[in-house]
Amino acid sequence: MMETATAMEGAKAPGVLGRVRWAWGNRRDHLGMTSLRVLVGVLWLNSFWGKFTNPNFVGGFAATNTRFAGQTDFVWYKDFLTGTVVPNAEFFAYLTMYGELLVAVALIFGLLTHVGAVAALLMNLNFWLAAGQSGSTFAVNILMGAAAVVFIFSPAAKWLSVDRYLAERPLRRLALRFPRLTRVFLGRRVEA
Image: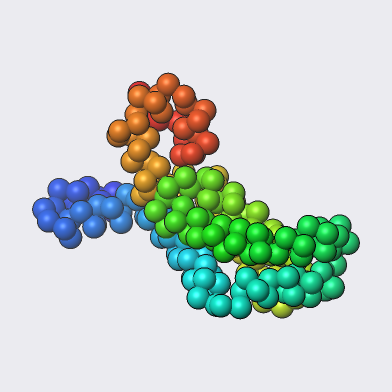
């Protein structure tokens, strides 16, 4: 009860501090999930930047995946790496690098959040399958994949996002006309 009174008091308080108190009181879970989404997006951006600035990334992609193929516990994934990825190493190197950039942009800005989270989940699954259960990469890929699943199913993660703004403001009529499409991108139905 005290929290509600503080939240209502903050909503009536003028200025920036009053708005912050109101947002923190009523939207604590939304702010937390949005912050987590942005933080994970920054991690993806950092991963992209490391690959983008490394002049040996594209050239060494085939050797890296050959090493992963020798270490992986999954025979079918070893066949995928040696039969598909290694012969087309340059394509998959650029696909990995720019895929990380697209995931980062999607999560940081909340633009096509569901698409970015699904792409993040698939990339983490591939990284986990390639690296196997070795040390820190195992934990990082599992945690990042779990975060992507949370972003897909949590409307709170899309509270402060470009998707929500577009669905509720300029594209509202389109969102009301195609509610299933809105649920795919926004995670909830837009009210009439």
